[in-house]
Length: 292
Image (tube, rainbow, N blue to C red):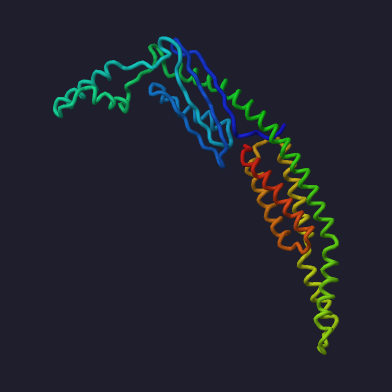
């Protein structure tokens, strides 16, 4: 079990029309699911089937499917001669009216619809069977590559998560004495400011102000939420389900907590650990962007 990468490639083939029908699948990272398919003109009718198969098996990423025919005989694209003759007659008439030779107009045929036909004897049912078989083989190889890379990403995320937890605990330890230290420093500063004056301030008011400053610097809530997010990250990593978007969301939330910690940090030791935490979260975020 583990995470699945969004990057992969797979190739499959199936017998078709005396040759073979070849399917190539490529996937790269993308925030959502985006599907694109390309097929020769004689097989354009198969594109909806290809996209349906992709959407049923891929959950996230930019997916491209390329369908082609290979091999002798009917495996290659077959020109519909009757359609071609019709187009040529029209091109000759246009050329004669405008003083153009046929060679100048031949490139127009590249945009002509219905110029290519299915291999001789091929029927829609045969096309569907061949496409489905080639897709299944290509998908198997694609998923194997995505799974292999996903295992490496899972291991990397687990290592980074362990380092993140250690950093959070170091922050918790440093912060444990921060409130008391801030309270003591506040008392000292207030006492120093009043030392050369005759102003009398109620000691209870001084204690209240010092306590307010200490409370504002308290990071227990941020530490608690970061620990909770780490537990959720661990569950997502080992669940073996598409988790990329959830991982990105959690890491974004952890980044916000880290920013709050940074704003409250009143000591250089705390600031250093917050910077380390942010760096670890950024590394995890980069990995999560390629997780399905």
